[in-house]
Length: 244
Length: 319
Ligand SMILES: Cc1cc2nc3c(=O)[nH]c(=O)nc-3n(C[C@H](O)[C@H](O)[C@H](O)COP(=O)(O)OP(=O)(O)OC[C@H]3O[C@@H](n4cnc5c(N)ncnc54)[C@H](O)[C@@H]3O)c2cc1C
Image (cartoon, rainbow over all chains, first blue to last red; front, side, top):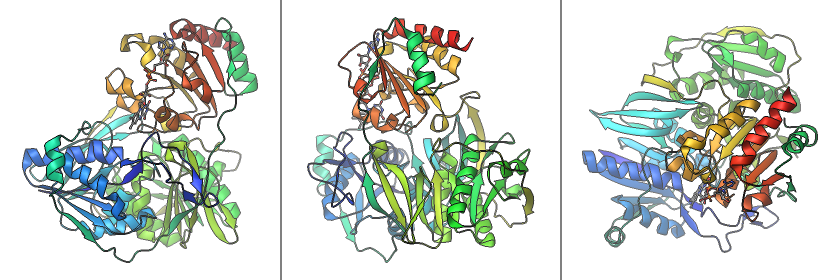
C-alpha cells in the first residue's frame, strides 16, 4: 500500500503573532516553526501505523522553500520512508493543492491534518480530492484499512458518522485518529539518510491571497466580581454585556 | 447571483443555514444582485428561507444524494452554480461545508476563503473578505482574484434576520453520479444542543475540576442557560470529557456570545480558540491565572463554591 501524507509548517503554538510591511506580511522574526500538529500527531502517525500493520510505504509531501526541510526531516524521523518537497512558496490553498495533486497520482491513501493552526483553512484536502476525482472524508477520528477498503469514523456536529469507501481516497485527520509520537534517536539518525526529493512546481494561479492582517485588540480590563454576589454577575451579563 | 447552500437536519434548517442566507442576501446587496438558496435533500419548508433573504429557493433531490458525500454534493452544488450563473457560492463553516468548499472552488476555478466572518468589501473593484487566522490571534483580509468566489461563513458571525416573505421554490433536475461512500452508521452524542462552533452560549471547564465525577455543577450551569459544554485540552486528553468538547488552538475554535470558563488557567493555546467570544467570564481561585487578563468578568474563588451559586442566581433572575 502506498500512503502519502501532506505536511505543512506552522508557527509554534506560543509564537508571537505580529506583522510587518504595513501589516501585509507575517513577521517571522524570532518565530520557531513546527510541523502542523494535525498533520503530525494524527495523519502521519496513523499512516506509519497502517504501514506497519499492512506493509507498504509512507511518503510525505510539503510545498515550501528549502527552510522547510527541518520539518520534513522530522516527519522522516517519525517513520515516513521518503519525502517530496515542491520548491515553491505556498501562497494559496489552491496552489498548494494543485502541486500535491500533481505528485499524488498513484497513491492508495492520501492523508492530511483537518486544518493548519495558522490559516485554519481546511481547504486543501477537498481540493486535492477534486483534482484527482477521489472520495474525500474530512475530520476522520478513526481510520482502518481492510480488503482494499477504508473504514472511517468522522466527526459531524454533535456526533460521529462511520462509513466505508474503496481505496484510493483522501482523508483529513482529527484528534482521536492516533496519538502523538516523539521520534527516537534511531529514527532521527536514519531520517538523515532517507530520500528527500525536491521537485519544481507546476504552473498554478493564486486565486485568493492575504492582502493584509490586523491583530484584534485585547481585552483591556477585567471586572472582578465579589464571589458572594453572583446576582451582580448575572445583572452585568444581562444589562451590561447583554448576553443572557 | 449569490448561491447559498443550506443544510437541514431532520427537515429543519440549521441555525448556520439561516445565518448563511442572511449573509448571502447582504453579500448580494453589495453586489447589486439577488440571493438564491439551495436545498439538497429533505426540508420541511424550503420556502421559509425567503424570510431570511433568499429571493428564490432551488431544491435538488436525487437518490444519489440520500447521504452526505462531499463528491456527490460538491458535484450538485457546482452544477447548480454553473447553471444559474452564481458569482459567489456560500457554504456554512461546518464539517460538511468545509469538506465541500475546496471541491466547489476547484470545479468553478474560484478563489476560496473558509471561515469568512464579515460581509465582503469592494475596494477599488477588488473583492476582499476577512477571516480569523492563527486560531483567532489575528484577522486576515483576503483578496480574491477570480471571477467566481467560494466562501464558508463562520458560525455566529452575524444574526439570522427574518422578516421577508416566503420565496418561490423550484425543483432542479440534475444528473448526480452515484456515491462511492457507504454509510455504516451515525452516532448522536449530543442531544439537541447547538454544536460548539455554532453555540451562542458555552460553559467550559478545565483541570481545576479535579475529576470527571465533578462535572455535574458544570452541566447544571449549562442547562439553566441552554449552553453547550466545552473543556480544555488536558481534560479531553485524559478522557474526563469527550474529544469533541476540546476547545483551543488544537481543538474547536469558537466565538459564542458568552464563554464561561471555570478552573481553566488560560494558556495561550486555549485562549487562541476562545478569545473571539464576545464576552468571557473566568472563574479561577488563583488571582494570577493568565485567563483573567483575557476576561471581561472575573470571579476569583473556589469554583466548587461559585459555580452552584451562579446557577442559583441565574435561576432566580429567570424566575
Ligand atoms: C502544541 C500545543 C497545543 C495545545 N492546544 C491546546 C488547546 O487547543 N486547548 C487547550 O485548552 N490547551 C491546549 N494546550 C495545552 C495548554 O498549554 C494548557 O496546558 C492547558 O490549556 C491547560 O488546561 P487547564 O487550564 O484545564 O489546566 P491547568 O493549566 O492545570 O489549570 C487549571 C486551573 O484551574 C484552577 N483551579 C484549580 N482548582 C480550582 C478550584 N477549586 N476553583 C477554581 N479554580 C481552580 C487553577 O488555578 C488553574 O488555573 C496545548 C499545548 C500545546 C503544547
